[in-house]
Image 1 (cartoon, rainbow, N blue to C red):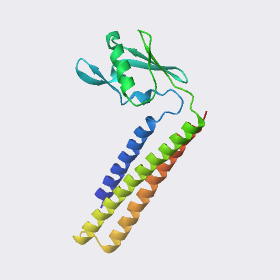
Image 2 (cartoon, rainbow, N blue to C red):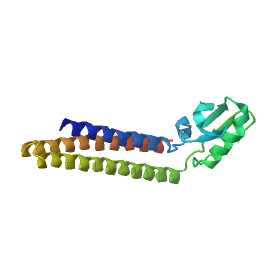
Image 3 (cartoon, rainbow, N blue to C red):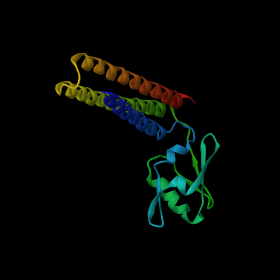
Image 4 (cartoon, rainbow, N blue to C red):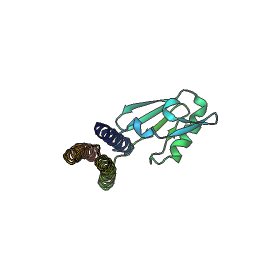
Amino acid sequence: MDRVFDRTKERMEKCLDSLDRDFQTIRAGRANPKILNNISVEYYGTPTPLNQLAGISVPEARLLVIQPYDASILRDIEKAINVSDIGINPQNDGKVIRLTFPQLTEEHRKTLVKDVSKRAEEAKVAIRNVRRDAIDDIKKLKKNNEITEDDQKDGEKEVQDITDKYIKQVDEMAKAKEQEVLSI
């Protein structure tokens, strides 16, 4: 039964990692290099992550500067940023690309908070699905007479405790992201 618990924790941990990656793509009015993590640029015919082709720095709170290692791909980087859905227009001066993050309006902040809540709820649903699978595994063990009825009840309680712990972590992550979005 320990295998069931270990697999459950591992799968729930993956749900938290996925939520963290989702939250990184939400702009909070501050320059955050992680917003560029999902952008790939065609480099000699191969899609290459932007962070492998350029140095990315944050000289000011609302400014990202992208300095390509190879100046010939400046236009390709600019094109990839325009095609992506980050919602910021790059400014190319021939040497570097600047991304200026606009100040968020109150209305936009509320929309982002709703998005944070929605993504957190999706993560909770994923965690509950993992719980359901774990409980099904425990029931199979009981059906095959590998564990007793008392072990089954204890196992189901343990799975619920693990689930509660991960749901609480999702709530904490969502609350922290909401605070980040709402802070000016």
